[in-house]
Length: 315
Image 1 (cartoon, helix red, strand yellow):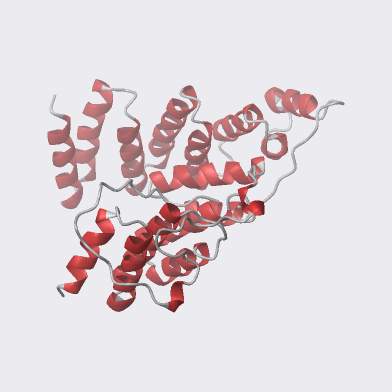
Image 2: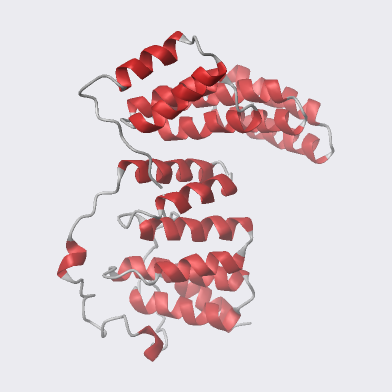
């Protein structure tokens, strides 16, 4: 079976407005590989767009279960919450989310979901038993808190022979050539993120990977309240808005990230490269060129920044 050929055919059916034919193609792939997460997600989304919400929820539950089997619990939770966005009283999804929160030690979150289950079904034995265990003496409940993490920026291959123009006074946070970036002693302290904030961050990552950008943005905004992962959240928010095509917001969050103190040069370089991409996408070519040059000045092995500079200078 040629998987890519079937995917191409399914996409053609979708573009032609023939979702039922596309669904049949996806079903062939699921039969061949029942653990293909990507196809479960595509099939679920197609069912949902076609108005077959019950079938969509079945696929999402299967997908969540696959993630849970691999202990990718926050991704599983993100998928089960997708079910709740269709049916907020879906007991199976509510129970699965509650049990995974409990597994992650997030008793406050688990308790909220079990209480929701009892509002729907007051005699639910699983929820009643779990609440008794959570509220038993000696078990400390984890309180809920607010949001987290920057987008993935690929590692860059070694440089070519290109000399960036000198930086101006505007980038006074960069050390002199040959000097290592100085990190104040306090910044060297390792900050451990709050568990609830970390949970929201991982949910944001899961949603972003599924291109559910609005959900991801909401999670990252909550997680960003924790100083330990605030920088990572701003970067992720910048990338989410960039992927959504909201370039002004993307620029705003990348600029906020540049205000972080004590960042090493390589991290600053990747951050400025991302900001340059947002400027470029927004049609702000002079700003993009300046920002790519800053990235290359910070890390002269940054070949992608170098390529961007050459390309923009030729325009």
